[in-house]
Image 1: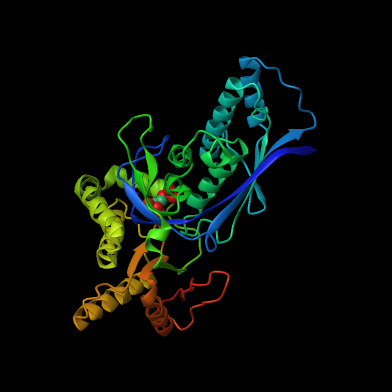
Image 2: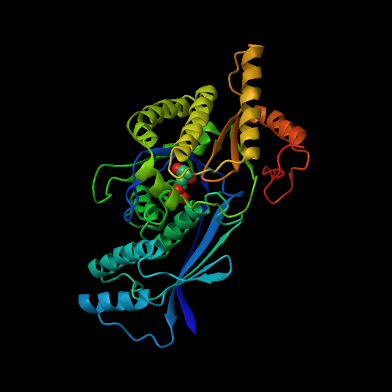
Length: 383
Ligand code: PMV
């Protein structure tokens, strides 16, 4: 029997990169080969909800106060930590990323308990963690990003480490922990427009997320998620990145010129709410990322025929708008992560046009709840 001593719940949304992270220079610490930038989606559509509880298990013995006793208690508690993901218990491997995140946060709590005798002692208690996504897990919809962000925020709230719960760790500091769960997770700790600064330090101390602009800054920008396939992706991002780092020459130019220059241009496009510039950089980065995947040996194919049709449709839409000469610039932008699903960005006034076009070319698309603006496109392409 386990009795809950203290519990905290947090939710974190998915983020969709407009300048993609692809490649690690340190696979254990998850240090990226390039900076990246994303938009965090609103909470209600794609999010992970996680509760973390410090529990007293019946056979638990009273723990002593000495440093070595507290370290032994933490190790004993770690072996009893448990996680349920979407209702199914998952193993917490002793060397895995989940273990790394939990250990970092538990150690931070132990330190606080050691320094302040008045603080309630809970670091020695096992954690029971329950997490749920409101969308299909591992379908190329960045579930690991929202999942690790919600996990880190809920445990840091339980341990009163984050600034919202009166603790001393900033959101950027916690993003270093989330990063070690899944690289892109560090960006989901912030809302709005978020950069992951790759950093230079070998220990990863400067590899963290920073908010470029709040969501409120550009409220008018919308994301439309087009679920083309909800099957598990063919090449997981970890394996794909490793293969690209080992074999792609194109990755080198991405690291040294393409991304650094694009980060500057897209940051200023966001600051100025310049959708035309934002759209161009977003689409070019998606294409450069997928070209790098194709340059990998053996090549990695994340896009399928339906993805490519969506690209053509958006390109054609933007071209016709340019030709109309209204000076309005791009109507929409597409981007694709490590899977075939499209994310379209568009200013609010263009959303009806984009949706009507999708309806026209994909008449079987499902526009129903729970994904509201998430049309599920036919797998076999246009009809
Ligand atoms: O953090 P991971 O291992 O899920 O990798 C994410 C990689 C991309 O989604 C393709 C790009 C990105 O920056 O999110």
